Amino acid sequence: MLETMRRYASGWVAQILIGILIVSFAIWGIAGALSGINTNTVAQVGGTEISTIDFDRAYRGQIDNLSQQMGQQITPDQAKAFGLPNQVLARLVAQAALDDQASTLALGVSQDTLVKEIADDPAFKGPGGAFDRAVFVQRLRQRGMTEDDYVMEREASEKRRQLAASLSGGATVPAALAAALHNYQTEARTIRYIVIPSSAIPDVGQPNADELTAYYNDHKADWRAPELRDIAYVKMDAVDIVDPAAITDADAQKAYDADKARFTTPETRQVYQLTFTDESTARAAEASLKGGATFESIVEGSGRKLADTDLGVVTKDKLIEPKVADAAFAAPANSSTDVIIGSFGPVIVHVGDVMPEQVKPFDAVKDEIKADLALSAAKSDLSVLRDAIEDAKAGGATLDEIATKNKLKVAKIAVDASGNDAEGKPVADIPAKDALLKAAFESDVGIDNAAVTTADNGSVWYQINSINPAHDRPLDEVRQKVIDAWRAATTEDRLLAKAKEVSDQVAKGQTLDEAAAALSLTVETDSGQTRGSKPPADFSSDALKAAFAGPKGHVATAAGVKDGEQIVLKVDDVTETPYVAGNAEQAPVEKQLAEAIQNDLLQQYVNELQNTLGATINQSTLQRVIGAS
Image (cartoon, rainbow, N blue to C red):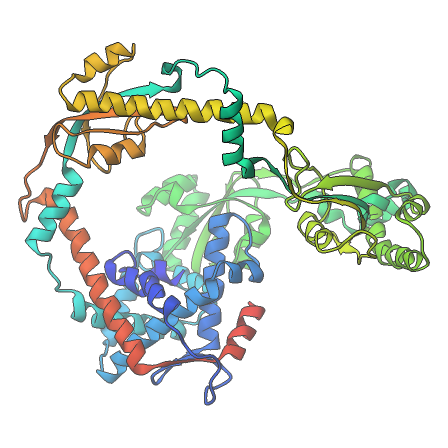
């Protein structure tokens, strides 16, 4: 969140300090836990430390950001799998290197500058467009920071910005480079082309015996049968032993009464809040409301719009200020409160529509409660039943006997290591699929196997009944598949040959229209096509690359958009837009190149800083913080 608070967060400096520097650290080898580092320090660069608090705050913020992007909460294990710890540490190490150098150079930021920067930050502005201390405090509270923490972080960021800008802020773009990039991006071409479908190729017929045998031998691995194992298993999850009929109405009623909030939709209200700079102005507005003025007219009189005061349709717990919450949920619908003196100044609250609390009756949720109670009871019984089954197994009981005694089922599947059947189709509903298949293909016939645990803490007991080793399927077994593959491959070969033939004829002088007419096809035209613009739906990316591989008059072939299509194209015209240095239209290109050069310079500087200063990582502390976040 702090990045969004900074005015310069979208510029090239922020891109470096927040993102690109990760690359240098990701490959840069840093020794593990070294002596001399404080246990409250995750890393040290030169004389600058990265504290556990700073790392934890940054790490949790990165997890929150990723969770919002993915629409679900990211677990610590998932965060590690995504590489978030290294990314966050990389960014902080790069920042620490700049901080250390800024300290060495005695860079500073005046208090007046910091105050102005914070006051001008859009993230802290209230509905009126001015700095709002309440918003400021709320933003910091959400991030778990004190004001001092934030001011210190802001000061450090400003020093890094000064250092970065002094190093690469004045980098200019060579005119030749700018012109080359401009020409590459803006060059436009008119491309005429025909799409040759496989249907344009006469039926290739059936292969003779020699052709079929030769094709089979050349591609024998395509039809090789994988190892199959016949696996019998008994699964026991809570859902397999659940018994809702064992739950009485009295038990369900007791659970309903104890957890009625679960079946209650709380009262919601449309709430508007108008904040005032001083109490006298608020009291005057209160008097106007009591005199008959509308809340909306009071809002407009303050220079704001009603939408600026809208807190939305909320439940009482969503209102942060207790006094405001109490007043908002005590007022009648479509009414305004008196002035409320809250922690962030005087406010008046207006209540719009009120949606009363709703409680589902017991009879409507009785079956759901019984199912939940039965499932909970089944989960509690799992460990007892698991122990009983293990004892039975140890006593020589078979899977069939175990299943019969415990009212479970024995399932049998024949699968390869990927979970597919003999035809290569996935076998459905394999419990704990990855773990079961891995264990089953490491076992053998006659082995007493340990149970596999399911995601719901259930168990799967299994045995290998037989093994059918991998083998080459004989031609007679896969004859039709081989014939179909031969026909497809032969058609593709002839299609490629036809496209090459047409391309050669057009290159020698035949018009594309004549070539298309001979195949009863239509010539299509794509005008104004650049390397970066979207081609027509029937023009593939391969064809676009081929069209820019030669000068005007260039003829080429490429794979079509769909399987079984070939494109023959000719570059009909090439249009180049002259590059004019300083032209406003070229500004984006020059800006793009300048930022790339600046980024590269700063990247190299930070790399050298890191190598010169050295970095030590306290691995034990790092792992502790990662595991706790």
